[in-house]
Image (cartoon, rainbow, N blue to C red):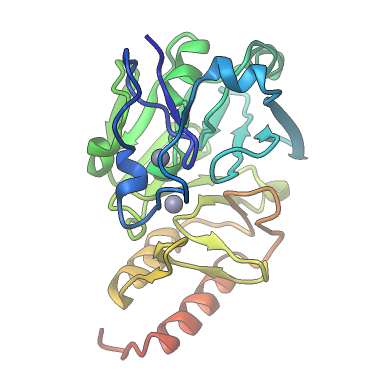
Length: 273
Ligand SMILES: [Zn+2]
Ligand SMILES: [Zn+2]
């Protein structure tokens, strides 16, 4: 049996004899089935096709984890390194022995968490490669898990995974959409790792908030305000989005507040909404 991986979103399914009939992540209105129809691959095929994991040092204590050549929606994960253990934030739809060896040499992984179900990738393979480390999944998004596993640990609200590394549930894009606050980031000024719970846009001085990015479905004012309220208590300067080039080097909460004001103005929100 193979655990098939959706070529469009990169999320791995439960092992099966036959190809799954559809991908629930891609059938949802927030994603899309690629032109030409549903397609599946496996870790073995991807390795044979030349896919590999690329690690990039982004700043002291932070390593990016991406797939080369780009696969699925092209996100990269982030490994936050601390003296109390490393946390893998977000996931990708591939893993191989070389990546496991390289990450072991960086101290391994003590816990994993994803911003939202589009970035679940091959999370079970990642957890098992590191002795079954906990996969922290928000209670609100448990139903989106495509490959259940004993490593999954439900949480809600907020959760400190290791000292100085805290998950914060914001909702919006998905009910369980979360960010990771890292106190040691940006030279001690703090960093917020956001996936696309809050998305760093091409003009990296700004962010945006959407129910669906590929299908351009906006969020209502109440949810945009709730996201900003959820992150406001945490000090941070830098914001790491879900892709290599989506990083706001500095600006922190002021930039997010300014982005939210612009968004609310253009969706015609009134102060009371
Ligand atoms: Zn899919
Ligand atoms: Zn998404």
